[in-house]
Image (cartoon, rainbow, N blue to C red; front, top):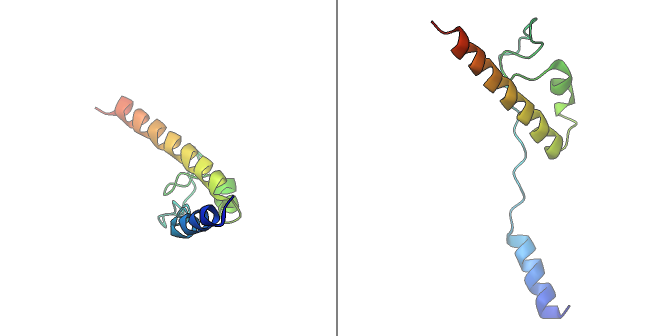
Length: 83
């Protein structure tokens, strides 16, 4: 690689912002539902809540994918039970 190509690559790396950290889904409604074993606020399990701070972003995204599925499941149940 030439010095010019290396300089361009280094400049591009400096201009590319890092990916934002995955934010916690916690909304400070910390109450575990005895039926589902999910937090009523964020829909995570106790194990997921406990692991969150030590998880990398890929693991956090996997947890969020699970909470999305749980949310969809709850919405489906509400539609079925609606008058």
